[in-house]
Image (cartoon, rainbow, N blue to C red; front, side, top):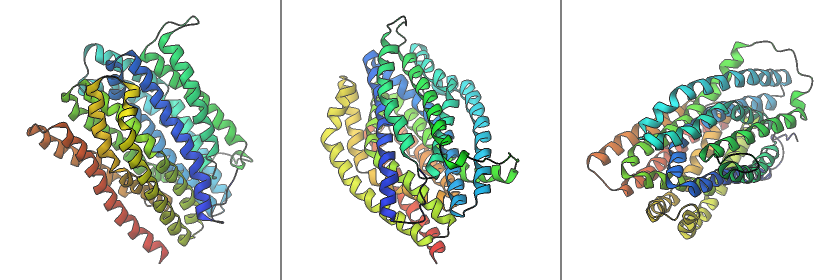
Length: 443
């Protein structure tokens, strides 16, 4: 599959790219939900341990995903310019970059994980359980990087189906492996949360192999030129990838910050937050599909200097996103408690998670606007704002506001409302900023 996104209906291209991607990410989220479900069958402490580890886990995804998004933008722009030589040199440099990134993530992760978990308040058996899970995930970080970079290259040519196939298959395999590894059997001992982590790493390895095999079928890996190191390409990858990476890493740090401030409310609140954000992700899945579609379409059309098509793409995506928000709100208001009860029968966890989800429902469209406009800025090679926006939303404002909440011993609901307010402030600002950048291109 090799789509020329500079031609044809924008709306149809969005559907072609977003629907497979959304389906794939739905099963990816259900993959995480499966892990949470099996952790819940172990104990509330096990759920809390996964929740505690999630910010570190997400940092691994963030670093590999952010840099890979930079590769998608660069390859897409080069394709839009019809520059095949540059396209393939970017691809070769991306593979080398991915190797060094995997080594970096693994090394830093192993060295920092115990400290980070202890700073979140884990100690004793709680710390041991959380570290048992995240240490295995960190050792498999290279496979996560391989998956992300292979998928980024496939996205640049409009192929979102391969990643969907991996995520759907991975979901069903994860159910089987979680059940087997957590409970033991067929010669294996019961591994608890270690089994959940091991299943994830095995599936990521298989996914990396599959996506590379799919990539080999495309024109991208055909007639590759000799690798000639070009420092400027590395600089370009950093320029495009660092803002996206910092944005995603700061999202992980944001979760770290939130977990740090809500931890004094008890393990049940940490567990509730961990379960609730899994459910929230289900509702946000279609917007992630839009995010992927917008980045691919905008990148190719920006390279082709088809700026009116760039503008149309963003407009259509935001319109679709608004309709999805309405559906998402209804879903959360009707089914939040029912979904929480699937994971736990602890009434304290359910009540804290239900309150979070009711408030989160009001902020879904803010996330949609942020995701779409981040993709726009990446696609037009103007991603620098993401660093400052993320610092503001994920770190500076939450630390200041939550410190005030803590000083005055305000109840938990203030923290949940604060999270929703932070994302809406970010959405309004990035919407204004992106429109300014887009208007300069069009005119």
